[in-house]
Length: 361
Image (cartoon, rainbow, N blue to C red; front, side):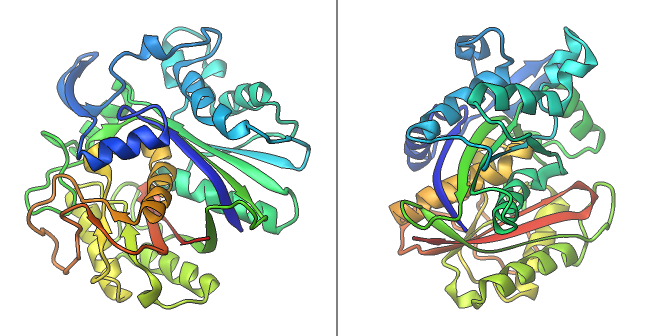
């Protein structure tokens, strides 16, 4: 299985190339803003959402989705053998303020976008906490392997809202400033918003990367807290390695979940130590984009693919001194390196974990 094309829209840029340029300048989208009754909250948010509304019949997220997907539709013929998977945790949650609850349903967003893009197949919505974006790619891969589709468009989208921010604040999980993944002074997550997309296909010709293996294990540890032993992540990575039929020394870098909460980063460090990957260069992109929820896994996979083709390791913004009990080779400086194989991981509420190994074609 392969990924043939990718794109993203974030507060750092309106396409993949502009995002990459911003990362190379070490720019962060995180700013302190007021959202509803919440004052001075650090988030990565689009500065002027109204300016991005090209079609007023669509929601903000749907407008961004068009800008991400339309460039990928060039030279594509969509048939009943073309699937569409949407990853989101909250979707058009802003519609709850102005329209009916039905309009805010995740399935409705999938139907609207499928119709706009010209899909005849029924859209599939993946909403499984913060592993959603990466899990959606795994599901697309499996659907093609099962023979249901020839190729699948995976779209991941989420936005920042007062509701979501309030939820994370109730867990006392929000950072006081821009998040600091894996750092000894990290104090919580910073939220962000983004849209990303990828075409998954069974065709090698013209593809960017091969999906060597993937795994998704839920350890059911806790409704919000990750396993102290990293059990679900360890098993997810092990499953990905088993399918890929390679060993850890083939991995050139890890794109970790790295939310900058005390428990998540500690869990990841323990998990990578257990499977012998603690010495592999590892980064988190949350210091640039914040945690974009259901979009994060796919957004970070897209950036990882770009990293592989640019042969550049992206630094972990906000990191200075390691703050986990197990050693982790956190990338501190953006640097050139030969990159052919990447491990991408994601973890989320409810004990959910997903891992994927990709190789440059």
